[in-house]
Length: 248
Length: 374
Ligand SMILES: Nc1ncnc2c1ncn2[C@@H]1O[C@H](COP(=O)(O)OP(=O)(O)OP(=O)(O)O)[C@@H](O)[C@H]1O
Ligand SMILES: [Mg+2]
Image (cartoon, rainbow over the protein chains, first blue to last red):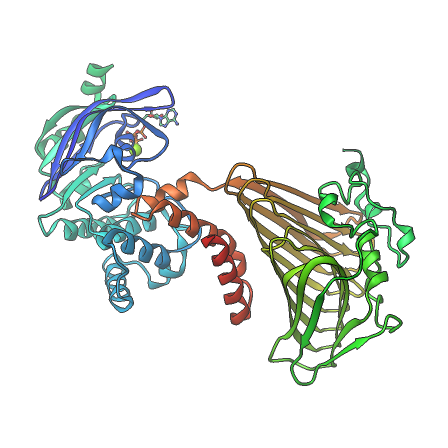
């Protein structure tokens, strides 16, 4: 059992304050959706938890099973069991997908996987996500289409098996088939009941495949409302206007 | 600027076998302004004593002739005329030249190896090597520089009609070595030349690879990788002189620099003369600056004297490791040092992968790995 506890998190970029006290707790077995207007700070929350150097923590805590993640380096957080599927995965020239994945799996699991086992897991993972085997030899994310990048994020999720996964708009830019394939990947990850998911999205369509237990509305750098899955439908019908007006 | 504003072609006009035709450089000349003359140990001003101990050995596969010849041999200095003071110094000071000849139409399965091994920095050594690849022959030459030395040389590659020559030159010197060489390739009609330069070691290395064409259809690829550590000065000065129609050249040099006083210099001169219609050329230099205190000077120059080129371009970039790349890898649990190594290896590896000979590609890759592990 794991718990990610975000307590009164405040984050700035440069001298611009973006998160104004976020409180949120994600336990294993739970799926939380975060919805909110553009620019409200959803990606900032995700990146700040992962430890991106651009963001400055100005207050609060992020605890994974009681350990303050904000004290750890980016790679230590990942090894502690956090995973961020990025909204815009980075292209890394000259580093092949297979080389990268092997390094990541070795780092996170603390020992190099047996080559044959790794090749098998990789192939199974790629097949399940409908990723062509040739991608293993390509440079990481380089020239991948938007949808291909997202599927690779989920491939990494499945291979690294974190405790808590934050998915930042993994559904954006996916066609209907890819959306289903990616959702199945997330559901395989959830299946054990020992993992928690924080899913950032603008659309309810992914929530039909990946059913959330809780929905949080994010506006102006904080959570402004919480509810069950029905809240997502309400947001889709009515938009965010009432929240943005309230917080402005 | 001053000198920079002169047409490129005039900067490369001077060529002579006579040492007295070249003044002792002062450091203010365009050709010498980046080179720390004081570290040349007298190669440039005649004060270096010719008492060095550099041993050059050639290992040639069957069917290739390799000879040590006297200074008066007619094959010496045919393709290349010294273009600067140290080059002329070397030309006038070597005792015997190595001449390797690949006969007409011979296709070699094994590389020709030339080992240049230095035994210390007391006194200078001078060398001269000529590699002749006769028409339609195909050969690979690997030149390895090792040990420690104060060494200047001229190397001539004469590539005949329709012949192919691949050259790997590895500068894997000890930390105190000083090495100044010109490597000139002369391409006949439809000749192909592939050069791969790897410079890792040495206190000061100044290598000037150049290409000229004597017929149409010549095709030259010049690639290079360098890794500059604290205190090292590694300089590459390329010149491609397009003087015949329908020839091609591509230059791609990449380097990583780290540590106080690490200095890389890359000069990429390309001249497309009036006669050279249909030329297709591109030159690129990229530097990855890993720490403060390291510096890269990168100067691409393209002078086009004809109206009819098929393509001509150049680019030069010098930058830091990209934080976003490192973040992405770290976010997947990969520790910083390893993430950094992966990105640097990737940056240089994209070029190293182009070496078509497995064994040599692996050697170069492991030499770079060794640098990264330091
Ligand atoms: N480097 C920066 N300098 C100034 N402002 C920044 C910087 N980076 C992000 N911001 C601002 O922070 C705010 C929050 O951005 P963030 O990316 O977290 O929003 P988001 O909720 O993820 O939006 P979207 O739904 O469009 O993905 C935005 O107003 C954005 O312009
Ligand atoms: Mg966002």
